[in-house]
Image (cartoon, rainbow, N blue to C red; front, side):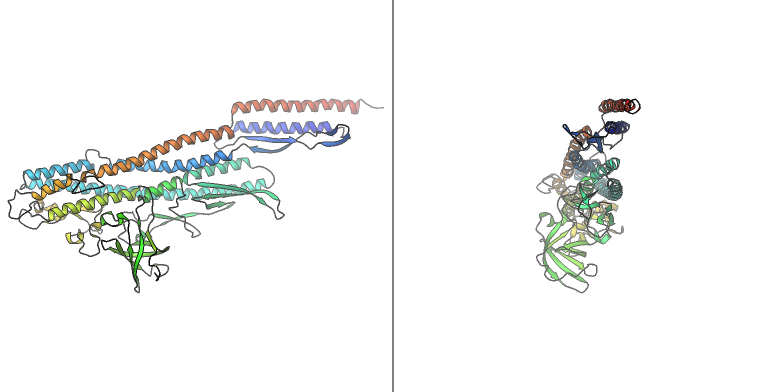
Length: 608
């Protein structure tokens, strides 16, 4: 049979359980406004009953307080983090697309459409008085304004690309810091929980860190129990954090670190890229997979803004290989439409990395035959291993397909329009004659990278026999020829030297070309439609980013409310719990008081 003092044991267990519940409720109330805090509750169960060898069988032995656990729903945690990943990506895109839109929107003073209209008006004035030096000077001045406009926009976009690049490094540093913090918390949690106690506050801290990480990059969390040598649960757990398509960032109290490695000048991907763009690698030497399709978050948005080429990158197959001692020439056949014209070319003019059959090589120069075949000069000394036979027919690529319209895309659009427009106007004016019956030169040219001198008409017309031609002209270096800038009378306005000085047939041809889509077409529009085409791209991307951002922001609030409804502290509910546990404590105390009286009578007042 149970001890005489068995009831006191039962009462004391109830007193301890009620006291633990009161303390836990007080802790909940104290942290009602603490960010990331999860409501805690006391888990209890009936103590094992005692067999009393009586007709009624077993006697209840009170209550046991098993643990203090936090109330958390992993389903909503996963939903919240997935949404944060999408929200972070769209937030970045919306912000930077607004900046590009602000750069290119016509302000009615220095915008593209305003300048273009001034050029048209200046041409009309020349037709009215072709022999006037002032009308030609005004035309050259408006052309110079156009080249300045593109020079400035080129600089703005390069500055934007540089800013995005710096922000990528900041995000990588944040990932590294969060990885270290999560690994530290993992270790602290296991030190506590291996003793059979739940580390609730530390788990809340870890969840907050993972929430922050999920906005930067996609996150997958795996937690599994750890076992001792006998195969029994040790009480500790192994928490694994994977990012960017399930690449392991944290494994228990171990963590991996990322590093940003600046590309050298000979490693550029696009002609218009700024120097020093970062590649991301693991510090153990493994590749991070910068263009991993499974990656998300702010990091993905930044990568797409910095490197987005709308899926248009250099790719083809090896046609022929010509071996040399220090260099090897490899001919690549391409079929993509955007690779058939130098006006659309984005290849680096400083050399770069080229992937041939899944092996990285370095090229120092390249040429184009005008028929889809590119020849690259491979530096054998720079490559890890020489380009060997058997590569014919292998896939070749430079850079990667980044299916978003980021900075490289808008750079390429500007370059394409300028190259075609400059070539068209140069062809018309070089066919003409000057006032002094001299052969006229070109109107548009490009400044050398050294800053001294300009490309000649012969250089822009492929005299180097490398097929590049107007490829050398970009939005960053386009300019009016120095000769015309100093002396506008050398503009080739006349179609025949035998005609009078008022004849301006070449000017009329330019006017016709600028307004006739059949003579000059850019994406199905006439020459003046450039800005509308580009702004429509920007507006669409900005609208999509803003719409998705608003959608995910609304979902964030909704999911977070659902999560808080489960794990958050409801002050009214806790107030009810206070009364409930207070009553339980009072009743347990009353039972002890009652038993005290019973024992007093039994021990002190009962006797023989």
